Image (cartoon, rainbow, N blue to C red):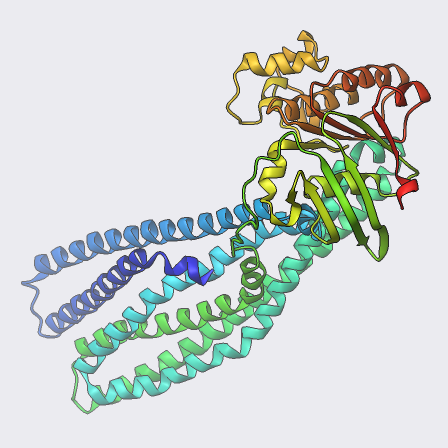
Length: 528
């Protein structure tokens, strides 16, 4: 995060200039008050129009300065947060799938919404706010010295109290904010599970129990939020009360010098006004430092996803190649999936991989398409080793179609095109090649998460999406799962007619006639 912030030095320079302007504007107001009081004390009202013009000028300049703070501060925060999120998106894009899945979706969602918002509000904004506070404090202090040196020194001594007291609350605020972030992530995860399983919950008639539990979880989540706000308000209130108490002490010190005749009443009022611009920046600075400190763990969490790692390996054209696995061994969750596994999928052939549940059929498919890095042995595409190749090269030529398919709430054409540069004619052609009829093609939307299409249509969309870029190899993982016998037969016919050079199907649902449609049947249990 600090590296991103350093890239926007120009905006910070502009904010420094604005801070100087704001400081002099505040001193200008104090000067106006001094002149008004000193003129009143002499009974001279002749300059009233002059003072009115000065007040009007102050109002105009202060409005302009505040607008500039809002504009450039908002622009800085927008740029930093957008760049941070963009880097996270880019890093997730380069991340191996199995690494990504070490964290739940709620982790990433919480990081890119709640956590980034907290960092923006409680780190980025305070960082530039403190720049303004530093200039305001320094310039106001100089102005105080010009009024009376000893009084200014006394003020500095008293302000040390305000500087050190807020550090007492820093750890409490940090803990409260971290607990709230963890609670937010956990609650989002539970809520996501409930909303995605709403249909099953209703059909099982357990919705009352589930939503009662959800309300209880929600209350616990809101309690964490309330505790964070309570801690923040307690810290801010304590800092503010101490600041006001010290301010009163400073006013007493100033009164002493008036009694001695060393300053005028107008000078005292100017000093009191300037005192606000000494105390408020210190108080705000201390508060901001606490807020910035409280986001430390959130920033560390985010920083892990801000470092963009170059994808290892070179780009290769691996089309029309055999896929060979040599002595591949792999363990997942302390379970040995493969040990010295050897097999070659020859280009130009079709394969069906069978075996009992949990035997490693899907893991084998995912190994081939670059899903995992945590294996020993070699996977070769022709004579190119998996370890030497850029994983994008694999994705361009080998497409894996699993049981879960990402869809958007749009029509079939857009769900197949998926923002790529293909014409409607190209999309419709590939759609029809996998049995998608005109009624489905002309449907305006397939609905949220594809709720307006059947399981068979859903799978056809996924296959068409993969085929449109003309890969040489297609891997279909359980393509007939959740289909009735009629749709299973239709899907098997679609698979039989796929126009690809190398075809690999993972299946537990088959008969002898279906197996005969493939060149090779791979019973994975025989190779383990």
